[in-house]
Image 1 (cartoon, rainbow, N blue to C red):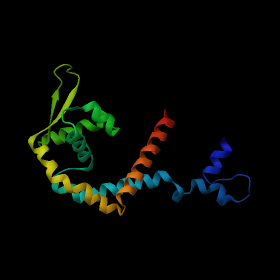
Image 2 (cartoon, helix red, strand yellow):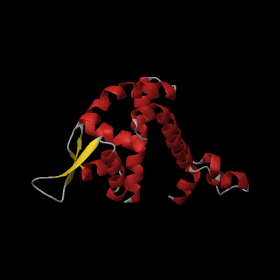
Image 3 (tube, rainbow, N blue to C red):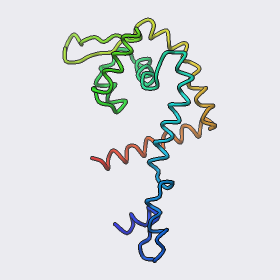
Image 4 (cartoon, one colour):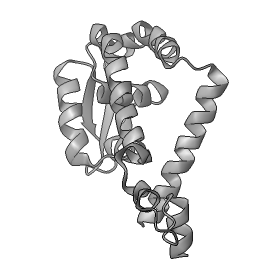
Amino acid sequence: MRAARLRYAGADTRGPDMSKRDSALRFDNQLCFSVYATAHAFARAYKPLLDPLGLTYPQWLVMLILWERDGVALKDICEKMELDSGTLTPLVKRMEANALVRRQRDAQDERVVRIFLTDKGRGLRVQAQSVPAALGCATGLALPEVLRLRDEMNGLRAHLNAAAE
């Protein structure tokens, strides 16, 4: 198994060629950096599209969730975004301060905090209609390629999450 992992990574330890052996440790060969740098590139590409809406990229993601279903529990938003409540709560509080959302304790279970869109937050959806198409153009990919790549990334994330557990 170990030898298979080394060969997969491009490091065959049977030969004397150190460059082959060390290729798994080359910065330019790291998939993780490509994903990391691409995430930053996405954030940079979204910025000029989201600035007129007064949203940051993480706030955009919260709004997408709420536009699909209003009144979502904060815990459910955390799970969907794969963030902890300590990260998401300050972000939602800033959105509340900007009158985009309101937080409300659940009537049946006061431990649950639900997030609701305000009129301003609902109205922002109309202004946001052009964002996905503009970002799609920025990728330089056709829609079927985008969907395939998204599915592959979701599969990769699932495999990595399973390996981490």
